[in-house]
Length: 262
Image (cartoon, rainbow, N blue to C red; front, side, top):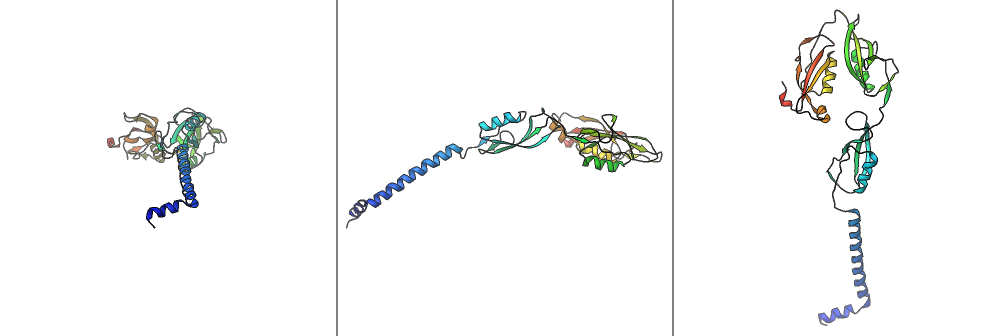
């Protein structure tokens, strides 16, 4: 039997013809389904993350809905730039490319500040009070000294220049001023080395040496709130190792250009 006659014989069979039609139909159906899925999910498309900073949560959700993205709040803070009730930070950042249905994590500035009861630090040492303040979410403000028979023992605690009683409600993160005792035999301290520290780190280091940070000067490289957080001490007065009276001040100069450290 010749080859063309063989194939003619085969295709005359109904079952083979039906099989070919079924396979062809299935291929067409699957192709259409894959095309529908591709377009409905925008498969392979990258979306640009919008800038949500400054928007309320409700408005941000509307913006993200239009781009088929989702919002999730991961933190809220009371301090920092921005209006209360608005978004102050986001991850991924604006213009970052993401897939459809991606979550955008945001931090909002809270409308009300968390309050805590003022602890009692009177009659404790400066070292102990500093550790306890940090535990309570507070920080050491200004330290001053008054004559006493006990050195570095807290005689009084203040908030916003007023004596504060134990149990009084104060904002979380508040700075507490401490008045400490100083005997005639206490002697002097020395100025610490603050070079390369942030302002917050410099304040903590100064307290360790029973001193305060005085004037803080920012140079031309510091242009925003974020810059103030990242700036480092490039100059201080007096310089490190100078004999100093406890409670006195050390002035510092801040910059983003650490090559200017003097």
